[in-house]
Length: 249
Image (cartoon, rainbow, N blue to C red; front, top):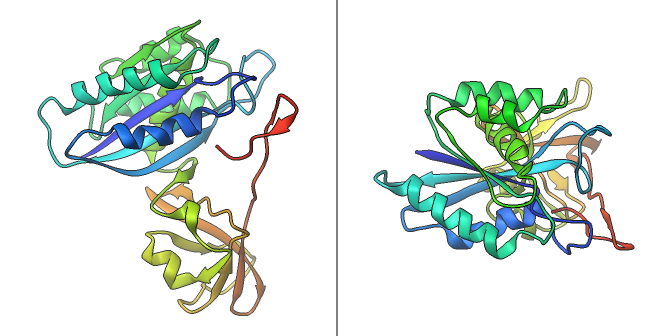
């Protein structure tokens, strides 16, 4: 069984870490019977009417669970304690938790999409998450909007990029296609009329591998440099925070 756990608005302009890192840290708090499959960053609408810290992104953990019982209740309690420890002063943290197959997930998927297209409210989030746990844990509680959106978008299987997945943060600057596939990452060529990357082809990662969530799988878009050599698309983007860049979260 997969369980989706969304966090949002846990940081502030003066904070040295962002929501993505708070989400990744929760891997150390998972109870027995749970394994972190990945953490996905979701980009929401950037609009002057929306208060946000840097890029208006939220994060969702994808947890694989081998037992049922009171697991959801246990995860909820641990996540609430996690926010108490790590949410920055002055933030508006929110939490959303849903198991795969929950009846309310379809509505939450639609809500997630709406958060990428228009300004929504806490009331919208609460209506969309009927039957699913959503809670605010400080400040204005606006974080429930992004947390619910993160769960909905991630559960749909078609949006966001992985900021945690196996050893992706420790991968070298260049490796073979089959080595990435051994990590569970599929390689997709984005060139016009490009050939399908071969197992022995090399991929230059620029020390920044962030697969997209496509069809429920981690997919790494690449462009061909020369035959047999590919390069990842996108790149690290820093965040200005107190005069310095804190980079990818």
